[in-house]
Amino acid sequence: MDNGLQLKAKNYSKEKYALAIIEMLYSFVLLVFFQFFGASDFVAFVLKEILRNNYLIIAGYILLITIAYSILSFPINLYRSFILEHKFNLSTQSLKDWFGDFIKSLVISCIIFIILIEVFYFILNKFPDIWWLAVVAFWIFFSIILAKLTPVLFIPLFFKYKALSDEGLKERILRLAKRMEVRVLNVFEIDFSKKTVKANAAFVGVGRTKRVILADTLKDKYSHDEIEVILAHEFAHYRLKHLLKLILINSAFTLCLLYLIFISSGYALNIFGSRMLNDVASLPILLLYALIFNFIATPFGNAVSRKFEKDADRLSIEFTGFKESFISVMQKLAEQNLADTAPNKWIKWFFFDHPPISERINMTDSYKETS
Image (cartoon, rainbow, N blue to C red; front, side, top):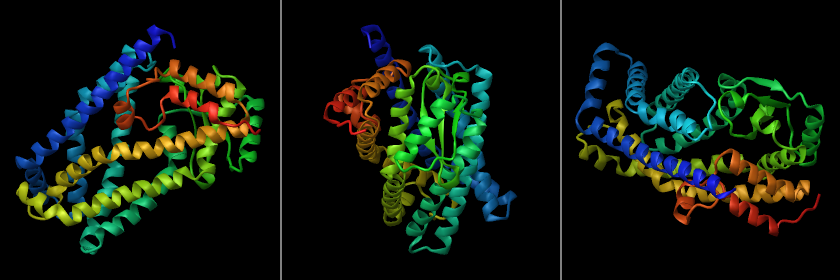
């Protein structure tokens, strides 16, 4: 990128990093305040007086705190995902459409959160000595279900699907999938341009829901060779079983978090003056555990993800032989998405789940073209 665009990308990235830290600290303060000053106990008490069924009390509690948190954090969300994107000319979405997506995301998140917490408390009460193991087993199962439902249920709520109209490109993608031993249901394009100028592509789904998705902002601006090397990267993740490995790694992190709660929650409950872990009024304490643990685990998870991305880059070039196209893709994506191509080591360590684009380009010198 030229110097002006590099500076713009740096400024955009700095604001995103700062907002991520602010949002995390803000969430921490809200949770501490809500638990320490008795607001959580009050909400739980009122719900217990109105609702006699424990599962309805849990659902009502989650619904209320989700709405409260969304209202309190709305200015940060608005700035991060709408104002900032327009400020750097990356968004094409109106405020009305953005708010509609915000509400849909809120409803989906609330439903998923209710399911997870209802199951958590059910397991906690039924298996008080090994609940942390049982919860992880459910988490693995639920993660696979979500991965299966994402392309057929969640993505269509935000984007319009249609079968890829470029038959030549579709045939190239299907041939590539066959060579890489990846089963693909179909190839679709979605209307990314209705929301953003950024480009993306993905291979999503599990089992019969597996499909290739191309953003129109990528399909219309990239050559067939460039699109093929991008999708070879996505297929490489499947061929190398990265999704399964990530589910297992995340489950291992979750297991560590839950076991930590199991052995130390008594101390945390005493600090906040709470009585029992299985009381929904203590839920903010569990969320504080998750927030702190996620902060500590994020750099390690990102390091694993960067390794997977590097392996997928290597395999994509080996299968396609398109080293130059891969380099041009990285350069185009850097400009189109305003990527921070060369962050300092601490920013990379904490925030980057992909290698920086400058590293991805430099690493191509060590890859062989075997296609």
